Image 1 (cartoon, rainbow, N blue to C red):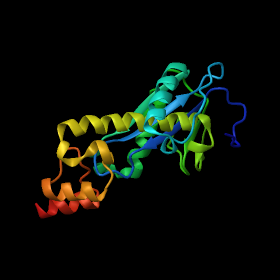
Image 2: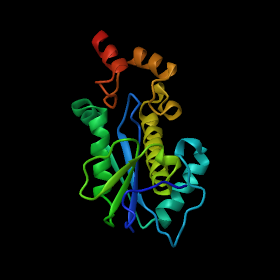
Image 3: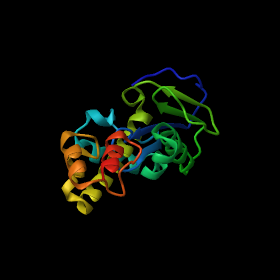
Length: 198
């Protein structure tokens, strides 16, 4: 994993990534991670390319070995209020602000950085190029998947544990049949259409 950074003097680098921009339900979840060079975590990769079992194992290792890690989020109501893009940036700011150790440089997956109080750089496909961002993607993915599993226990008829809130054919079918829960994003077109028909 290598990438060129514009701030080579940095010693405390935080990686930031998000999960959950596309789902119709739940929060967009972000994570910020500062890895400890003295306690490397082996096998880091883009969370989407790892099995659930491997992600869970790496989650435990990252939370045990990292210098600092934090989860940020923006709820469905915030997404509906300010839009998913702005909500994602807000959740990223919250993740960085929640770090117990203040980074001197932040690397963000994607092509845009949130406004932060320290230098930052966006890295396209950073979750497969930068270890810190890979670690953040794993923390965010495991956190959100666990939330969807918990939501499934409340609303088993929607199948959240399987599709994690994404607009699969099954989810859309159940949404049309049962209507929207309080956790659905009302500004997203499939949910808005169901609400208009209700």
